[in-house]
Image 1: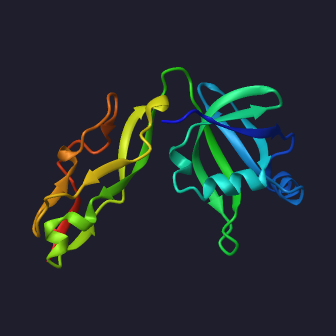
Image 2: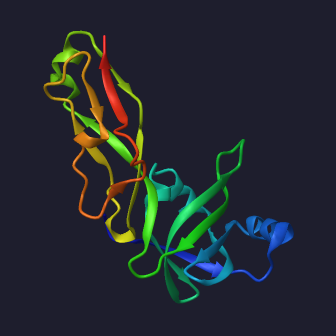
Length: 186
C-alpha cells in the first residue's frame, strides 16, 4: 500500500440539510468523520479533489490523511453519496483509523496473461464471478489489487480464493467456503 494521500478539510459549524447545502454552494463537499471513540465531526472538503479521488476506482479502499485546520487525521472513506444525474459526490463519510486499526475493504482483482491462456486461445471465455474480494486487514497493509495469472488454464478450470496468495495480515472476509473468483467456460 502506498503512503496515505493528503486531503485538505475544513470544520463546519452548521450541520443538517441547510448547512450541507450552504457548503455545496461554496463549491465544497460536506462530510463527516466518525469512529476511534471520538465525537463525530462535520467537515467540508474541496470538491475537485474529492471528485478526482472518487473516480480512481479504489476510493473506498484508500487511506487518506485529512488536514483538518492544521490537525492531521488518518481516515478511510466508508460511504460516498453521488448525485444521480451529474455523478459528482454530494456527501462523504470517513472513519477515523486508530493505531493498528483493522478494516474491511473490497480489493480489486486483475487478471494477467489472458493472451497466452490455452483455454482462452481455443475460444473459451473468462467468466469473472467476483471483480472485488472482500478482505479484513490492517489499515496500513491494504493491497492495491490481487493479480491472478491465467497462464496454463484450460476450458473448465476455475480460480478459487484458496489459490490466491494473501499478503501477511490479510484474510478474506468470507471464511465459510472456498468461493469462486473466475472460471474459463466454453
